[in-house]
Length: 222
Length: 172
Length: 102
Image 1 (cartoon, one colour):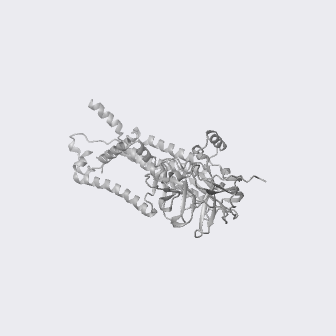
Image 2 (cartoon, rainbow over the protein chains, first blue to last red):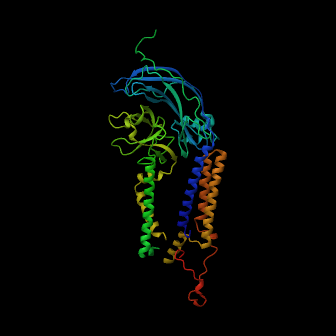
Image 3 (cartoon, rainbow over the protein chains, first blue to last red):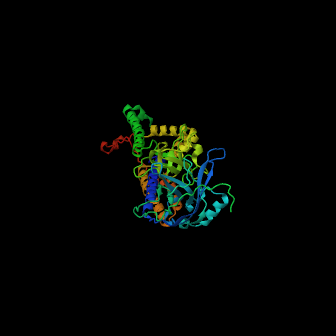
């Protein structure tokens, strides 16, 4: 510590040690905040299968399932001071009986819910970003953003299968998932079992349904 | 200060010390690599395609073993594409089938389209072995130094110079 | 000219005395730990991670300012060298030979 350079080195060295410890404490603090995420309802409102091409220049024809759904869920516990964003996504999952009883999973809709501390990072237009930041003015966390109530939502992604066939498949279920992205620490997902203070996601699965047959094209409506 | 270099024993001790620091770092890296079963257990985010979850310079910790479950939809994975050097960090959004031959499709949270265009020619899906790890841990910003160094190569020279100076000036 | 240069070098080097070094180390260890603890506790109670970050960075910057320059209070106990050629008073038992400190 005899010269300024040595003092800079030593002080910076101890600073990194302290910073690392604080980061570890912040990450650990998440395990002490209880989580009890609940889905009140998750159901399809309409299911359609249409035929189309993966992109404009393709000659391949594939079947696409278009699933509209309604969702009512309370994920507000997931927002703590260490939450940067929660990535919420709905998958459709169905078994492939012919393919050796394997499963297929595809995301049909997703949404990024940022914490107020990460609002400035969102990829929104300037107007909606301003609105988002304003909506949480003076708040460091905003648990109300975890309350989702979505009615008759169009899917963001029309899903298909590598074989191009999805029509008439049975045993399809919608499932709600989330991924909590922290400011520092481990990434966490929805759980099937209770772990410590974190409860499993309740009712995150819809009733089983069947993809309909391909909707015939150009049939004039009766 | 430089007089220590005149003393061969002290000079040798200094060189050994420096070598020890380097080999310890290398050993820890390789050890972590074995534990996680990933060739690159810690990666730095280089693009903004996963914003706002990951910014450029954030540090990601990877895990490449399927002890509890298969790599699943919703996980954020780092994968390599044939003939492309830089690994990509994106989220798995579709999975068809089970086990090592399951077909996986990825997409960046911040991208409008899925990754089909990023894959090799004729490749429509990833398989498990294309993936070098799933993201399990996150530390923000710390990796920004490496981005600075790779984007401004003259900084490397400066850093090396400073490190050399410190080693020479340091008293045992 | 050389003397001026030497003085500039000395100023930039920021040498402090032994007591000052002890004090500086104490200040760094205690105040940085304290800053970290306050940042975490306040951040946790307010559930505001940005506040914690600002406290930690601001506090650490203050510690740097307090410790890095050679402030006068680090130089209150200068080493009292024996006069040149005052061999009569030197007693061998009082000599401490320490290569590192030199």
